[in-house]
Amino acid sequence: MNKFHIENLSLQYSDGAESLRNISLEIPRNSITVFFGPAGGGKSSLLRTLNRLNDLSDMTNISGTVLIYDDTGNSLNILDPKIDVIALRRRVAMVFAKPIVLPLTIRQNLTYSLELAGERDKSKLQQAVEQSLNQAALWDEVKDRLDDPAVALSGGQQQRLCLARSLAVKPEVILLDEPTSGLDPISTSKVETTLNNLKEEYTIILVPHSIQQAARIADQAAFFLQGELIEFSPGRSIFTHPHDKRTEDYIEGRFG
Amino acid sequence: MDLTIKSSSTRRNFIQKAGFGLLSIITFMAVLPILFIVLHIFIKGLPAISWEFITGFPTNGMRSGGIYPAILGTIYLTFLATLVAVPLGIAAAIYLAEYAEDNHWTRIIRLAIINLAGIPSIVYGLFGLGIFVLTFKLGTSILAASLTLGIMTLPVIISTAEEALRAVPNSFRVVSISLGATRWQTIRRIVLPQSIPGILTGVILGLERAAGETAPILFTGAAFYLPQLPKSPFDATMALPYHLYVISTQVPGMPSAIQYGTALVLMVLVLSLNLLATIIRSRARARRQW
Image (cartoon, each protein chain N blue to C red):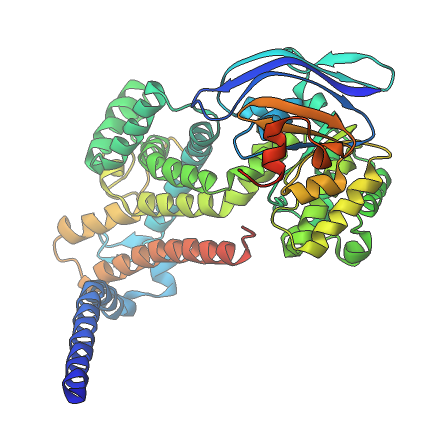
């Protein structure tokens, strides 16, 4: 069953930087989908379209259809300007390249979005803190210092805290934009293991920071080049037997 | 060969040392006038300071007694000016830093704020006289003087507060919004708490200016001499800077100890506000998490 249905999506920024041209794509649920390709290819733009974070950028033109399905099969048109964007962002959470913890305590970082949504029940908040930290494999490391400033954590811990923070609102989808680009190999492998466990419950879409990571983690992968979707293949075959010459060239390191 | 290199390097060392020496002497000379003024006022004014001087009324045509009404008046004026300027200033800064787009309109606003900061204080005084005292019929009163002082401090508060808000990394805003916050929730929960020390510094610096100014209150609320304390914001009041001007130039046979004592009290008041701002700023910097 699909989570997102993307049809003829085109997008342009006013400064003419990155853009998307006629993207059509079905993203299945409960799996890891990887968007990869050289910089400026449109991966991040597509990612940011899925929770309308693009609203913060200066777009001149966006057209096409992007639908998100819930468990009962109902769909919502993400590009519809009239939808409740805040509700959408609770369903589609985002983790950024740099671990950006809010200047609050570890606990407050995790309860931030729940409190914004109006949750006041202390025991529910505590439960969400514990559960999300466990899911992000961080609980054991921070359980004794939940009320310390989050910035005191190491880079790898901060990124797992950001992941936990996204999970705390119980979203349906987690978008990750090069989440391990600033991390050491051990922290990276912790995050990847965590993501592999999380896909049982969540739809995960990831822009990897290397082709190796893409190959390690992808259930299906999409190759983007200069705003176009070149190839989209289920499974990992795209990394061993790409159909398109351009994909092959990129994977073999001839450019990018 | 070896020797020439060595001698030229000692020569360069000497030039470097002499250069640094010269620069530090010039720097010291810049500090010298301030040191001189502060010390001079302290030495000459300290003998006049006593409990009676701080808490008593002027007597004998202000030639003896205390300056309590002037101290209290300055505190009233500064406090009321804060009430006027701080909410307005912070609201304007939030609008400019967080909501306003960069267009003609906001550029005009910014230009106006910069120009407002450069207007001579006597012009503010006359403006206050025309608008608050005469047009709004507030009379020469604490209220009219505070409004004038408040407007005069607005540009300082707006520009420091805007700067403090802009110093908060934009990534915090993006993350907060991606977590389902509205723009206003982001400002209230993340941006404002992070910029409060910076805003406070600006507020205090603005007040310090308000507390020490004579010209804006000259026509709007300051009294030459009052035998009793003001009873409401609609009364005129004595104030330290104006009182100092009066006893320095308008009263014949004035003992200089009282003049220096008054100057000392005003200076300590203003400098302690300045010190407070410095302490807040350095403590906030030490605790900042970004």
